[in-house]
Structure formats: structure tokens, C-alpha cells
Amino acid sequence: MNIAVIFAMEEEKEAFFRFFEAIEAIKKDGLLYYHLPHEKHLIHCIQSGIGKVNAAYKTARFLQQHPYDIIINTGIAGGVNREVFEVVLGEKLIYHDVDVTAFNYPQGQVPGMPNSYYSDPQYVDVFKQAMREHPYINGTIASGDQFMTSLTPLKSFMESTPDLHAVDMESTAIAQIAYLENIPFLSFRIISDVLGSPTQTTDEKTVETATLKSGEVLKRVCDAL
Image (cartoon, rainbow, N blue to C red; front, top):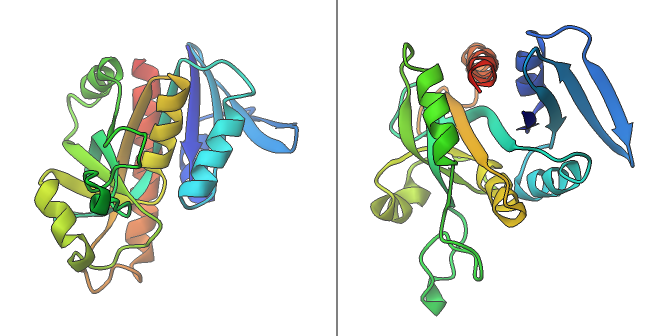
């Protein structure tokens, strides 16, 4: 199987790389990505940078390099009424900062695109099997170009999305590219901070631990594919 993995940040990438040796860096057409040796799969990884545009741009260019069977996006995220270190399987992905409701579109929907995107059911089942002895929660991950520190701006959005568990700045943009390219997608995140917590932007040790956990979960899922 050919697996494309998209990380936003260097720390998320390194959390996964620690499980591999002889990682090959490939630079092609100005794009830097990595080949990770795996006994069953071809795994290529890229660091997109933070934010929706960076994620979409790098993912679209990345997919031009090789045919992939699945796109996986993981890393850390802010928790919505959750606890740090919880694993959130993003069965549904949506934008929390898109609002064209003035023209009768549902909140979160980009005109001409679906209201939301979904992790591929086949690979959701693989994830659940890989995590059968480990706790996780499944639901919605929402993306937007803000680092959210309060639930207040999400109040109306949460009313229409009661299973919202995590927010980040990339997942839905990558899911949209996967949808446009008709490639199966899987998203899961580790809660590194909780919206509204007084230590949300200062607890570096918790963020580090959550980031390392994201690499562990990703390795477990790749082995199960």
C-alpha cells in the first residue's frame, strides 16, 4: 500500500520518524518529502506548515509525486470539552470558520463543495481495530485559521455540531483535497490543549507528550493497514 502522511509541524513529523531508520529525504521540483522504510508499505511523509492554505497547497503538490492509496493526517489539536492526551478519530471534518449562511448554505460549507468531509469507512474500521486495546473517541474535527483559546466563538457552531471534539488548522483542508482527488482519507488527532484552560498556551510538556503520542498512534495504524 502507498501511504501519504501529512504533518503540519516539525515536532509531529519527528514523533513518527523516531520509529524508523534510514529515512530518505527526497527533493523534487522544490518539494521536500520523506520516504520511510516499512516492511509492508511505501510511506511518504511531508510537513505542510500551519494553516489551511499551506496544508492544501502542500498536499496538492505532494499528490503529484506518486500515486497514493490513502492520505493520513494526524498530529495535535485543541480539545472541545475533552481532556489532554485523548485520541480523537475524525470521522467527520468541517470548517468552523466558513460562513455563507447569508445565501442559505449550512455553516461550514464552502459553496460548490460538500458541507463536510469524512474519513474513509474502510480505514476507520482499520483504525478501530488498531486501537481496540486503547481508548479513543470518534466524532467531528473542525478546522479554521485561528488558534482557538475559548469556546465562545464556537458557541453557535457547536449547537449544529454536538459531536465536535477537536479543532485544528489543517485537517479539513487536507480532507477537501483528498475529496477532490478521490483518494481515501483518514484523520485523527491527539488533544494537546483544552480550549479555555488557563494553561492552554504555556504547558509545553503536555504538548510534547501529546505530540509523541500522535506518532505512536500513527505507527500503530500504519502497521495495521
